[in-house]
Amino acid sequence: MAQHHQKVVLVGDGAVGSSYAFALMQQGIAEELVIVDIMKERTEGDALDLEDAAPWTFNKNVYSGSYDDAKDADLVVITAGAPQKPGETRLDLVDKNLKIIKSIVSPIVESGFNGIFLVAANPVDILTMAVQKFSGFPKNRAFGSGTSLDTARLRMALAKKFNVSPEAVDAYILGEHGDSEFANFDEALIGGRPLKLWAAEAGISDADLDQILYDTAHKAYEIINRKGATFYGIGTSLARITRAIFRDEKMVLPVGAWMEGQYGLNDIYIGTPAVIGANGVEAVIEATLSEEEAAKMAASAKTLKEVAEGGFARLDA
Ligand code: NAD
Picture 1 (cartoon, rainbow, N blue to C red):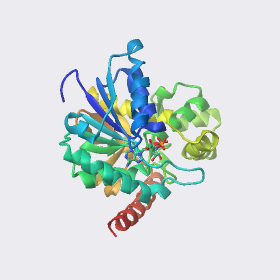
Picture 2: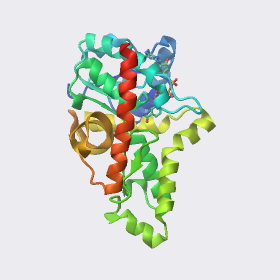
Picture 3: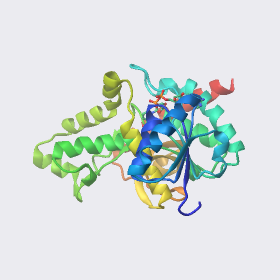
């Protein structure tokens, strides 16, 4: 990775992609940003619009490009694909988006790209697996946003409940980025003290915490029903992961990482904390889980495996 010059190719310039691009502009992440989408004119318009942010923030070369621009890129971020329509689950999107992913990954690999793939298009855990499978990249250099947005939503909800900053909350959503996800309430901390202790002192019951989890897992539907899509949260999550990679932060972030025995799981990408640095996923952190939570992780993985197997079989048929 060239020092002081880092290049991102963003594939998918819709609501999520353009929010990510805006976050990179605002936060001074990457010196070069290439935007690719089948809607070419939109990428040209977005590049012109985004570059107007540079004089007030950080200099950046932002332009509309093609897959060939990935040849010397450090990171390719994939946010292309059909989004959820009201009433649709993320898993409903699998067939449509697997085809799109296939058409994107091949030309990127053919360009000579040798960086890191970061995937956000849904169903993200399955599409991340598709990106790794189609690219043949090492698993640490092909990973997904996983439960990063969900974890942000959980931390925000807990922060409001306990009247602390969301940065002070050390809690995770694990599992599928979707309906079978769950929270590690039994181990979560706020300011080094168990969340369960905070809850007991504040008279917050397990049922109240379950309601927080339910609201977290369904927040996307609440947003989509009101404004048609969710994008600022995920755009910022992707920018946070990008910063951890480009600055080799070794930051612990929730992502969609490949399982090699952690949680008793194999051959699947799933939401977990991981150490993120210049080599992508540098270590998977197997969060300590209570028995009940471990059962939820297993169930979530089972859902993902079934959908992945069905999706890949239909794609190959
Ligand atoms: P959008 O419809 O606004 O944008 C999708 C973009 O993809 C469009 O610009 C479209 O032209 C482009 N596209 C479609 N096919 C393409 C192809 N073959 N090559 C290049 N570009 C192509 O949708 P959105 O709201 O930005 O959502 C994008 C994806 O991100 C969806 O799958 C959505 O479910 C997902 N998403 C993920 C998270 C997360 O936490 N991981 C959160 C929100 C949305």
